[in-house]
Image (cartoon, rainbow, N blue to C red; front, side):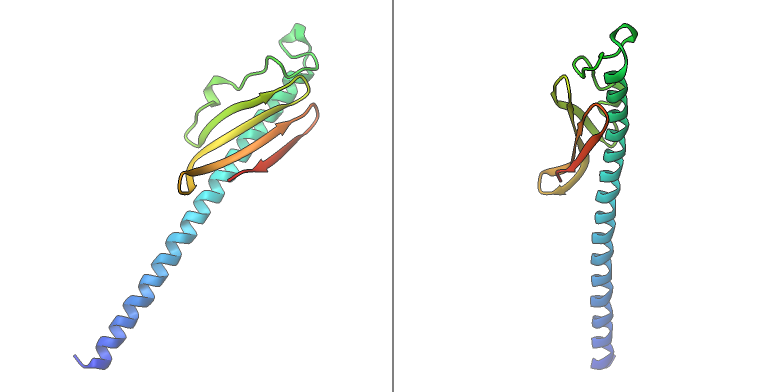
Amino acid sequence: MGQQQLLLILLGLVVIGIAIAIGINLFRAHAISSKRDILTNETIDMAAQAISYYKRAREFGGGGKSFLGWQIPSQVQNTINGSYIISQIYSDSVVLVATGTEIVTGNDSIQVRTTVYSDNYQIQIIH
């Protein structure tokens, strides 16, 4: 082969290598974004359950205008997507923290914090 053909093959390999690297990074970014969305959706569902508990009378198994006593259902505390804990609970609010199974950088996993109030919730993306 001529020198020009070898240079073209080398250039082709470099372009293919760059394309593969970009593809891997895009896939990873999409996986992290998808997992973050799943954690957010699951904490929104838990927020709705907590608000329902807050509004339900004590006689019917609720909190009677208090979050104290509410717990994350055991079947959703640890899922394939991550783990969920109550980091703080007060009579007027509860803070849920979801930690995903996807690693963002180094040892930092995806984390979503959801603060639930009597009639709404606030979501904060930590990682």
